[in-house]
Length: 288
Image (cartoon, rainbow, N blue to C red; front, side):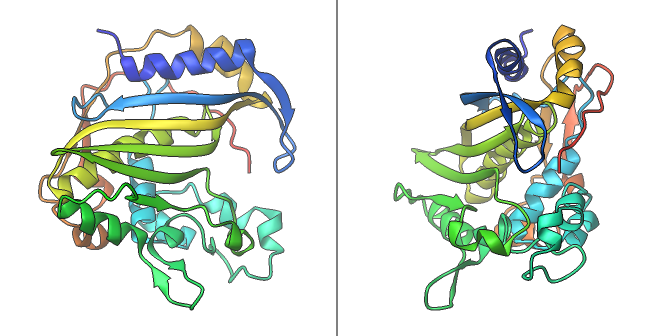
């Protein structure tokens, strides 16, 4: 059986290796092999879960990170508590953020990602909960063509440790089927993309479940897709030489019925994967 989600992932990796242009990344100081514009699709309705099989991949941390975003977390400690360690380095090892006078102390991430999604600051000092508006509309069967959650707030970049990479999510309701289009400005393909794929898939599946709709397609649009120089040999000489196994299936606890559930008791253990078979893990380096 063709693993369609992974097939398109591997095609993007080959495209970067074969056609990419070397670009120096100023933030990390590491060269990247880079292409511009990539479009990925995930069939959430048919449960083709995009968990990579050509290396052992771990999905629960990606789901935990998504839950933290949906809750509006602003501390790496909060993410650690729910089983996600991806924010430790950016909160505590990013020198520019350590020198930033707006940083509140250890583990503080500032006004990034979910903070913007749940508490966008308006000119009058009040705050807008973008996620609540979208959930309320979709629950009532409303799509005003603006069911959008954006984490990208240029006016507050200096108040956070990192600009958001996957920054905007647009929901579209066609009849009783819900679709998602997610936009990403920058993507570390060997290390980060599988996290992002999982989050697009789960976000649509979860929002469809709590708003009472059938999940459809998740469309994932990436602007700058890259492989860091210190990741290239592992991708080219190891992962791209492996054949993918069949795509696994995702099960979400059917007791999750509302945004309040997500905010209060849902954990990464309310999500499980079946029929997952993979090749051995590959330890790709992370660029801070």
